[in-house]
Image (cartoon, rainbow, N blue to C red; front, side, top):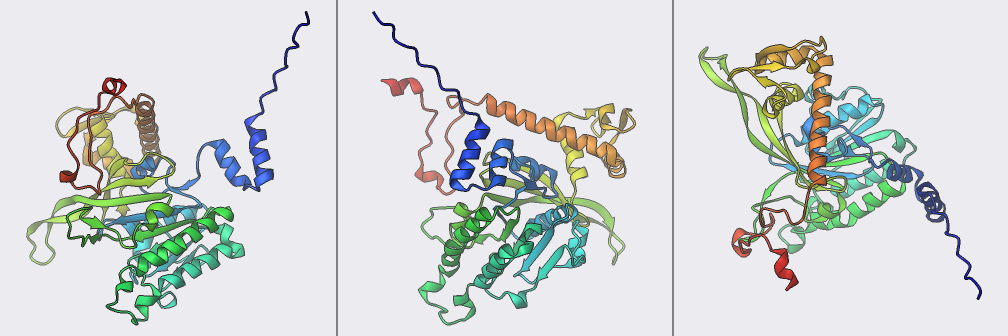
Length: 405
C-alpha cells in the first residue's frame, strides 16, 4: 500500500501583505490603507467635548462630507466655527462659503477661530457665490488646486441659504420644477463631491450647515420637521448631526435700563444627536451648554456631568468634593458647582485631567455596553422617526423560541 502524501499547509498571508497587494492591483490610496490598518479615521475636534465623544472618532471625519442641521440659533454655525479654530491651530486652512450673508468675524473670534489671519482663513462672500451651482464649482476648484492639501475645513453656510440657478433666474417661479430644483442639484453634485474627496485622498472636511423646515405633507405621515434638499445628504454624508435646543441657562441680574432685578438668559442647553455615521453608532446623544458670551462651555458641561456621574462626591445638596486625581496639586477640594467651575476655568492642568478621565471612562462604558449587547435582550419595539405611531402596531419582543416551530 502506498501512503498518501500529506499536503503541506500554505502559510497564511499577513494582513499587511494583503493590503499592499490591493494597493498595487487597484491603485488604492496609501493613506486609506493606513487608516484601515490603524483602525481609526482621522477627525477634526469640533470644540464641544461631548459632541466629539458621541461621534466615535473624536470629531468631524477628515476627507468626508458632514451635515449639521437644526432650528434657528441652536448652534449649528457656531459648532463649525469652533471646529475651524482647531483646524487653524493644527496648521491647516479654513474656507467659509457665506451664502447666508451673516458671518461676523468678531463673533467667530469669540468662538475660537481667527478670521483675521488671511494666511489660514478665506471668506468667500455672497456677492461671489449667488447660486448653488456656483458654490459647487468653487468647491471643485479648491479641491483641484495645488493648495488643497493645506485646507482642513470648508464650511458651506447654509444649504437653505443657497438658491439653485433656476430659482435665482426667476424664470420658472410658480412652476412645478421649482419645488425639487434644490434636491435635483444636490442629487447630482454631492456624489461628485464625495468622489472627488475620496479619489484625491483629501484631508479636507466639507461641512454643510442646514436648516429645519415644517413638513408640508398633509397626509399625516412622516416627521413634522424636515431639512431642505431632499434625501441626497442622507446618502452622501458620512456624518449627520442634529442640534436641538433644550432650554436656557439663566442668571438673576440688574436691568441696565430700569435698574430692577430680572432673569437674564446667559446661555442655552443643546442636545447633539448622531443621526447618521459611518464611523460609529447611530443614535448616540449628548447634552452641551452653550454660553452666549463665549460659545460652547466645556468646563461648565464637564463639571455638571462629573457631578451627575458621581465622579465628584456629593457632600450636601449644593456642595461637592473633587478627588485628588482631578487636581494638579494632588489634593481634594470642596465647593459648590459655581466654585468648582471657577477653579477649573483658571487651572488648565486640572481641567485636562478631568476631561481626559471623562473621555476615557465614557468610552470604556460604551465599549462594555457594546460588548455585552445581545439581540435577544431588548425592551420592545419603537417606530422609526418617519413612521407615525398609529401605522405601526405596538408589538412586544419577539420570542425566538416561537420562530423554531
